[in-house]
Image (cartoon, helix red, strand yellow):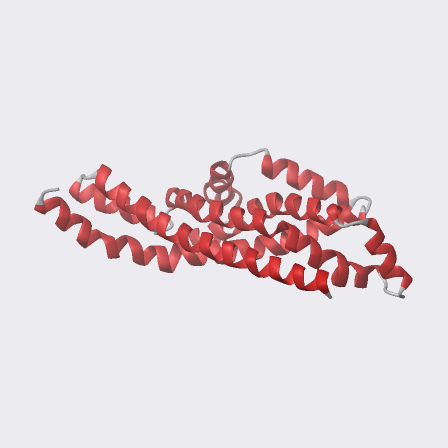
Amino acid sequence: MNQRLLGILVDSFPKILIPGLTRTIPLTVISFSLAMVIAVAVALVQFADIKGLKQVCRFYIWVIRGTPLLVQLFVVFFGLPHVGVVIEPFTAAILVFSVNEGAYAAEIIRAALESVPAGQLEAGYCVGMSYLQVIRRIVLPQALRTAFPSLANSLIAMLKDTSLVSVVTVTEMMMVTKQINAIYYEPLALYLETAVIYLMFCTVLTKLQSWGERKLSAYERKEAAA
């Protein structure tokens, strides 16, 4: 590696990393948090088999899972202004990622809810719990523990997918890398450097996932022994 290229990489590293910490990570955390709210609500509606609302939820999941994330970003950021709805780029990205991830996570949580033995619901009714109490105290905690690994994988995938928001002018890592590359024209080195930073972030999330799974396994063993 020549001195010029090394100097470019050293100089560009913090310039790419800082948007990752101030844009990519907040975008991922906020979007995933909102997506979980959507997912739990949609999954519970389907689990309870609420007529009318269940069909609305299935339609929502069908549309979101059947259209590309990039197209959804374009519709919200470039399409809505034509009908008078203008949304700031970062907010538009949060909206799209929340709605998109909510559809996928809803199916993960729905499957986890259905995996809880029906006998546990009946046991809750037998001790005088209402339906909402059974869901909140018995079904949902178990379902979320079951869904945790899949949801953690979805979080990691979302972090990587945030690279798409550069096309809607959000100044995150990919946008900054493109700007730096326009000056120095070292695409291989610069995009590999960006890939390394994404890998660093994903590695941290993977470690947190492993830690969370160990904690959940220990909790389940403790419950089984009680």
